[in-house]
Length: 176
Image: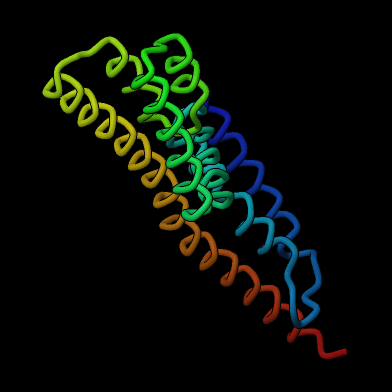
């Protein structure tokens, strides 16, 4: 479905650009059909290339990266770990599990129950490695989506530039 939507969007974008590119005037700074092509064609090509869930994950990753603050993240993790460790030491597993499940950090949410249930350190380490590998894989997939978008944009920009030059040369032929 995403492929069809991407292709239809690309066809509409190209159709608009081709029909309006020759009739639209060039004002010396902006050529609207070229901007439409540059703005929408890479997005349509990316929609055709990736599933909607992957696109949504990429958008969430970008939003999360824009909101991320290392200092705040460290402080929150320190606070959560301190509270979690205090509850485990005082032998209050229910409260420790509540703290782990409410933590903003994925690793603490996943490993907290294993610590409370007293899994071996090897099991906890293996689970941590697997969990981090899954998180990194998801980030790499989002990076691939954004990389595709960045590779497609210059090509469509070049097409838009050519269309703008054609419009410019066409306007030069009318020396009014």
